[in-house]
Amino acid sequence: MTSGMDDFFAVIPAGGVGSRLWPLSRADAPKFLHDLTGSGASLLRGTWDRLLPLTGADRIAVITGVAHGDAVARDLPDIRSENVFHEQDPRESAVAICLVAAVLHKRNPDVVVGSFAADHVITRQRAFEFAVQQAVAVAREGYICTIGIQPTEPSVGFGYIKTGAELVIDGAPTAAIVERFVEKPDLDTARRYFADRSFLWNAGMFISRADVLLAELETHQPELHAQIQEIAQAWDDPGRRDEVVARVWPELKKIAIDYAVAEPAAESGRLAVVPGQFDWDDVGDFASLWNLVSSGSRQEMTILAREDHVLESESTGFVVSQTDRVIAVVGLDEVIVVDTDDALLVTNSAHAQLVKNVVGTLHQQGRDAVL
Image (cartoon, rainbow, N blue to C red; front, top):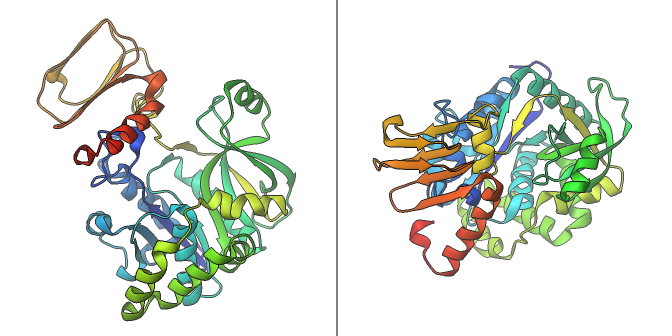
């Protein structure tokens, strides 16, 4: 375990169904429970293993849906039961992260919490650890700190962070103030950001002293703060918790932590950023997954299935199959085929983001059995 990090507690929000990865990712088997890269471990387990050297097993918490609690426990047998938090139903990231922070703050008033998504892929472990160590040093000084990723292309799929003046903080040589957040841009704007090295991708990692995070939430979302605190005060008392959660949870506002805390903190000069010099991928759609498992080469067919079940001729693309059906792809470029027992997806890399629309349509039609 890294020395000098005894006040640091990692939080893994494990929610969402990864709708752009349908039909592979489903409500009962969401993205974070899958081994999407062939590593032999789920994305959740990969996140746990990545954080373990920084925290030890006793200082990692997971917040997930009630329906996924058993699967999380099987995937993470070393997690302490009191560090598994169950959401009654999804309320976006502000509730998930701030509730865990409030409970951990009640247990330890000096705790520094860091939030790390359960379904991202990160390589270059030592660079990741160095970035987190810097972010913890910044957080101890009273800032909310995020870890930004140096763009590798002019992507329109991510939000951006504009870095400002450097911060002078011991143990954080690359930290800077965040000037502003920028929503997902159009392509021309993304190209300008890519050329301007002061823009970083927003990877959704936030590190803060729990008291600072909760104070920002109270300033900008006072009603939500009061509700979260009421739940947190009862959380470790199972008898009280059930009553309070049943009463308060349905009233909780659905809002992302970016909007509830991070963006207002940036406007008041309370948000910092550390550039992450590691490889990062949010595996946001099948085009991203194809790029990841093919190491960036799209000049051939990448197959995650039994090779003898996939026939291709004069084609490039990505085939994922969970069935014994024979799949033949002829004369197509950058095609994506995902075959499961009850659903078949055919698209191409340029339209991979639109898979989410299919999920929305199926939900509207009441066809939840395939979701």
